[in-house]
Image 1 (tube, rainbow, N blue to C red):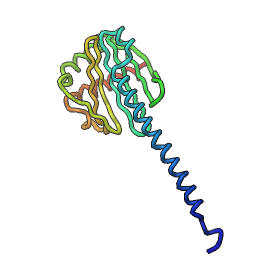
Image 2: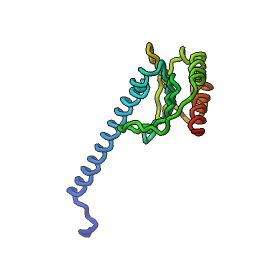
Image 3: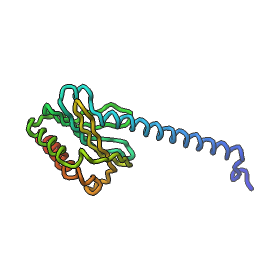
Image 4: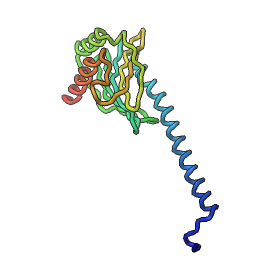
Length: 177
């Protein structure tokens, strides 16, 4: 065997140790990202406490996750304020757009949510991609989450039509700036 084709055990151990270190670093980064995303998700689901204090109620609709951990959605407040935002793990929220809807439109969305079977529904499921709704008043905070596949079938039936209509309303409002 020639000297150039021979890899010593010392070289093999060095490469193995390097690969082991890289694997440990990547695994640590993944664990940290997942733990931060759970904390961020909990904060997001309760909404901005200052905004909730000013508004009688707040509805947050969102979806995201996956490899990047990006979550985006809309916050609708009883005072008519509608905010589109996005968040990446470990970063502050980015406000993408703020607008206003009539109080009657916001109240209609709230009434439709309350009339749906959502208030009796139990949905606390997460997945690689997750979607959810949070409904916060001064007295209570309700939250529903589900695995989101991109298909309407992944949305729980009790809230499916409401979720699609509320999301469409927010997008139309944003597009009409």
